[in-house]
Amino acid sequence: MLTTLNLVLDLMIALAACLSAWFWWAASRQRVRRISRTEEFDAGDMNRIVTALNRTQILNARAALFTALAAVSAAARILVGAVT
Image (tube, rainbow, N blue to C red; front, side):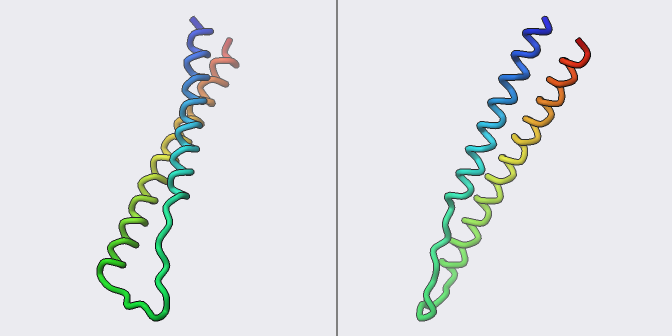
């Protein structure tokens, strides 16, 4: 029973860490197009900037969630190992 619990916790740790890394990688891939000094800044440009920032924030929030899940799973795994 405990070996099954340890295996499940180990898999949760690995999966959460991989998902966290993927979300942070995806967030880092978002690039905002730069505007030159001669270009006119319009509502479309502002919309693109806000959309890029919102998408990055969502991906960072998901990555932080999965990092927390990995940490909690690792703490549970350590606790199960210490109790046995």
